[in-house]
Image: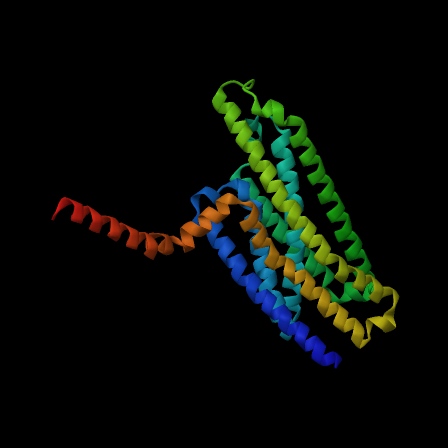
Length: 303
């Protein structure tokens, strides 16, 4: 009975991974194919979508194929995801702290953000290689599960604190940014637009942070329980709980693209422009209406 239930959970996890793969592929295509979205403002969202894509593919393969390489990819992309959310918080806080905006634009360039994303991937790969080493595992003897959960929890807390400070910055500095005291009305309008964009992007990442944290908690708690209660950690019921928690976390990679769609108007516009263009151009109701109008015009003119 337990084996059958685990098989059902594995099939559900594979299905969620397939949906997440398609969603994140579409998200990456929209960000890469839409000129309005090809800017440093959305660099970390694109990096997060890439991490979610690799995680979904690796998790789907790892459900049925057990290899160190796939496990390393899963751990690396998980680390990249949480580090990307933290980096986005720091980036938005700098955007609000470095005033006037020209200071931020000169310091934080597109090339430097790409470099930060590369560093995040290197950190993720280095971390998973370090923790997957057999000798290190033998020395730690299971302590890495508790240490990993504690480290990730600390990162979540720091990330939430930075987002709180960023929102506080917005609340405090919106009036001066929206005024014309900086010079011309064009500068005031630019500053107001930047504040609105920053607030919108912060809301997106806060939602992603909440979803990721809620989906991460169960598997982290189970790892700690396995360390302190070894017999329960080797039972069949524990395996059911583990697969259920993996399924819950994988759901976050499918929810993130829906958050992009919900909160980013530019993302929806880019999606419609890329994938719904043919529908917009060849709308049967519009064509029929145009033909009816033409027929009326011809009848009235007596032709």
